[in-house]
Length: 135
Image (cartoon, rainbow, N blue to C red; front, side, top):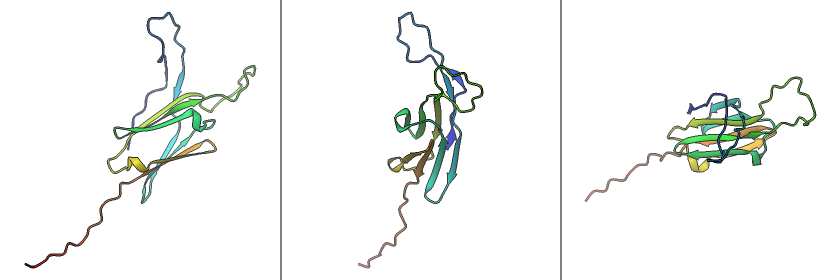
């Protein structure tokens, strides 16, 4: 699994073409990710405080796992931020999967702001003995 990350950037996508529109700057950040390997396959953990199932999108296409969405702030509009460490805004992470990941059995669970993605290995055919008959 390799990591395909964009740098932190301002985004001006999804703007109507041909209109006099001022681009809106958006902060895109990379959430922290842990990946470990077990006998069954790979397990990915993403720390995403404030994310809900409605504000996250997880896709697999062309052997690439992509995680993106938006985290909104829980700070009231009239409050003044004194210190902030949580990422707020759009997030994006992308990973190239190895050929032995079974795309049909990938599972994702979100629990208290931690996303767990289970990437099981394709089950290999077990060797079997073939009977040789005498004619």
